[in-house]
Image 1 (spheres, rainbow over the protein chains, first blue to last red):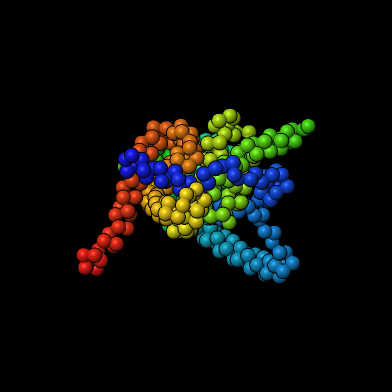
Image 2: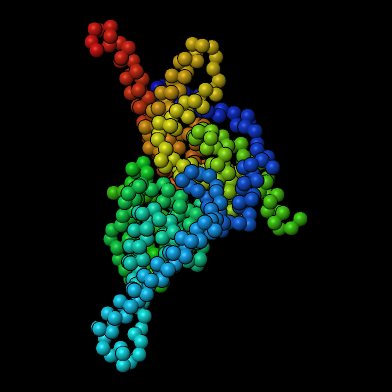
Length: 231
Length: 185
């Protein structure tokens, strides 16, 4: 027996569960199965599959009674702040464009729709591990193809994208997990190369990742096939 | 039976067929207090995607792939040392024969698991899937979403590296026992 064979034999003997049949199936009526059925059937939008802990928990309902006072204060603060900002913006616009007063209201400032800006926002949100900010960049019609954490190859819709996006972010390094290079924009499509770091410090590279953007949101986000080896 | 009931029945059958394997898979990799959640999360994904779960023999590797991803997310924030302790505690389930055999086997198990923890996570997974779950390379490729050729190559490298690490640990274990005889500390 070679050393390698001996080591592999020891590894086989170290199997913590040598006989799978010894495991008792947790049947109907038991907590795991009930949790799956209950949480998987009708209330998917209310469920937060907590990927940090692996446990399934329902999203907490806000305590409206105890938070009502704070909510009202916050509302007034936001309203006052909005009025101040609007006033300042209006003043600056009128100063820059004297014709505005004569020709009616100025057209509203459009949100940036440059695909590269959307990509930048995605990278920033991803590296902040802010799943809500990431999902702001997708719509119910968005599709992600070829994502390494997708089990189907193509995912459409906010629930599906959020689900594996969370897995992805949870497995990423704490800081600067996602960096990009060679960014190119052509019409509504942005293409780039990325370097992704996992929480064990392993590097994964991918060239030719691309996304089509419309109104600042990803319509299609594509991970090309092939491996993730870095040069 | 309406469509919803049919889906429930299909899932119940799927769940019963694969529960033992998925539970064992988790038991081999994480501490017992985290297993229920991991198994539930794995089957929850299956429930959501019942329509795309492959049929026949590919269903189990697919489910292992889901479990692998679920456990990967749990790994964050937990030290490798914790995982090793769990594995060592769990390795008490290994069949033993006699006190002398027990001591040797426990040490060897500890050493091989320690050596394993020094490999890349994917290489560890390939070895475990191969040796503990007894999956063939094409099924491991399905679990990890890489090519069968890549699995074969990485398994080869992983076995070599595991052996190297094991030998290194074995030698470092022997050296302190011999040194005092020579009068050096």
